[in-house]
Length: 371
Image 1 (cartoon, rainbow, N blue to C red):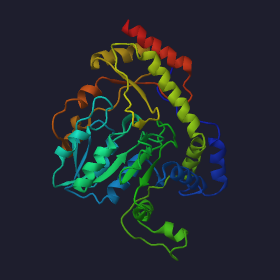
Image 2: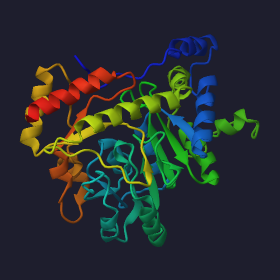
Image 3: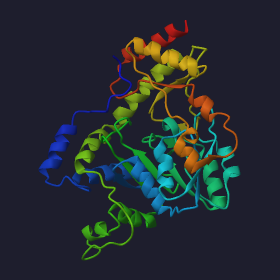
Image 4: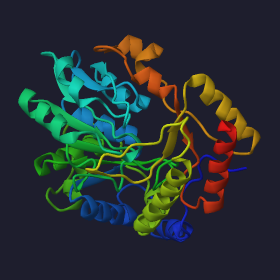
């Protein structure tokens, strides 16, 4: 059986976890959390804090962006529920707009017409690690005085015009879930563009206290400063992640190799559509997907691959069609592509350690299906 996903593992995870235990500090912000912060700060040229999940990074972004009841936040409907949850929990209404059929990202040309006097933020989602059209989005945000919160859950090591995803907007959010390119089981990170907001982010992350300032010797005791929560991951989780960050380039190159091998072997099948990566985007091979003719054909192909011991899966059900999406949001304009394209999309196995022969076997089975 060729699995759809296998969590990344490079070999030093157990050694580092044991070291974290030996350090007798397995709570947040221990040795390995600091190592991860240093790596991420240097890699992204930004201010980064590990969190317990990308969902929590989004929650922090909503708090730091001062989202309140009655505000509106614009985002695509083709995304994971956490993108919307973070703002719904603050009382905001989610305004969904259609996606581009080429990248499956938010259609930047439709954002401006969705803006009202209640709009507070735009949340672009970088699907499959391929960047949204950020120049246009940032221009719109600047002209309308809006926050930009990048959902870069799938975007670690990806870039837009040479800039790391997550560092372009006011806040960026990464995921280190089991299914991502680099994992700590459950985990994420928040990137803070404005250095003046970084200390506030530390406070929110530390249950609303200034404990980080206390540890740095800036205050002689720490106290409750504002509303916050516990968004710190265990240092054991960070130890698992750091082993992979040390091998980030190796993992990235291996995934790109598999992605390119898929593309080369599937590009001549006329009945399917392959991923598109704009020239200004540097992607991280987070996933390889194909688009079938329609949902019926996709269902048949999933079953065919399963019968041949290959696990493939579809992706998000558009949020605006869900019970919560109807309750907490609205779709602005017409759904030309969100539903139609989501029903065609099929994700193929993609993970660090995927063998070339498996990619070739999967590709051959897809060719066989279309013959």
